Every structure is written in structure tokens, then in C-alpha cells.
Length: 114
Image (cartoon, rainbow, N blue to C red):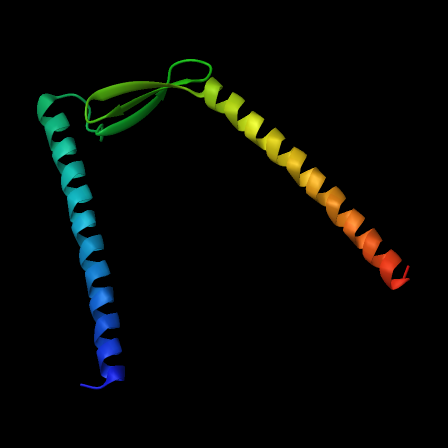
């Protein structure tokens, strides 16, 4: 077997492996959704999918339910942290812009161009 044939076979095997993994994941997700829907309809709850839900309970508080495990997420802390990070990045972006302008001025001085 020559080198070109070997690499074609490897590329084909990679594609087949990726397809197999995606197909298994799709079968798993469809199975979980089907079971959740069937159990909810047998219990007489609602004919909805409730394996994962997201409900807003307050101004910035969300309730996340996944497979009957409830967690509350307070987004106010995340918003504060996000604003801090964006302010920090903007500060360094402006400083980098100043350095670029200084460098361009220096190069103009050195090359005597305007």
C-alpha cells in the first residue's frame, strides 16, 4: 500500500469515526427526549419535554432544572464580572492604540516622511 492510499484510508476512517460519534450522540439525545415525553404523558403532567427547563424567577435570577436537579443562577454577579472584564480590556485596547500611534510617529520622524 502506497502513501497516498494510506492517507486516503486514514481520512476516510476519521470521517467514519466522526459520523459514528455524532450518530451515537443523536440517538442518545432522541432517546432521552422520547423517554421524558412518554413519562410525562403517562403521569398526566403536561405533554411537554421537561428534561431541561430554564425559568426566570427574579430580576436576574434564573432557575435551571436538568433531570430533576434544580439550581438557581444569579446573573447579577456575572454581569458585574463581565463589565469589569470589558472595562479592563477597553483600557488596554486604548493603551495599545496609543502605543501604535507613537510608533507610527517615530517611524515618520526617522524616515522623514509626513
